[in-house]
Image 1 (cartoon, rainbow, N blue to C red):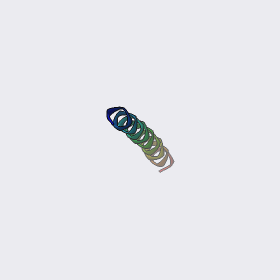
Image 2: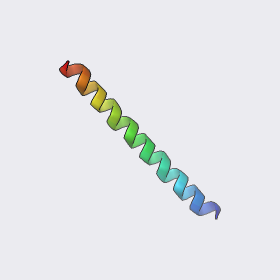
Image 3: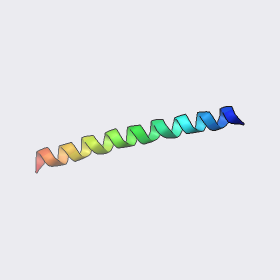
Length: 34
């Protein structure tokens, strides 16, 4: 059980990190274009 939970946690962390980086790049693009 612990291993599956750990896998899920790492996957969620990776997804959150990618989402944050994408949001940051989008915000930068909007700031540059404006």
